[in-house]
Length: 145
Image (cartoon, rainbow, N blue to C red; front, top):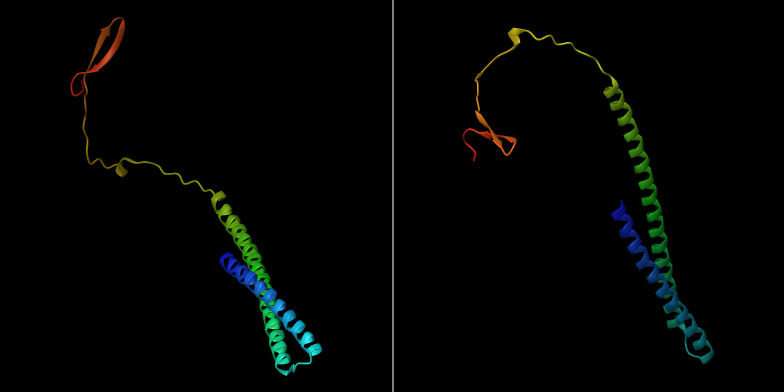
């Protein structure tokens, strides 16, 4: 949704720029028609051009309004999705919170029949106690230096 909003905002800026340019063109055409009216020139072609400019300006204005409506719609959808997410988080927390707090103790009594020995052994690691300057140090009998 945020990507859609970013795209729509970019499109809105483009539409607003086009609307601004169309308004300037329309004003220029109207000014040219007024000046041509006083100059005594034929204005049928200019009137047609003026109407075309007006139509393009209205289309650009409609594009801007469409972009604004789409942005409002996207923002509303984001708010709805966030509200739905919060509701789901609350439901999940309530459900699993209750399950976590539902504690039951099971007593398991060990018996000799449940003990299985696969391997058994005894290990012995000899070491030496050496008196070194009044301090007793343990040294391994073999394997380490």
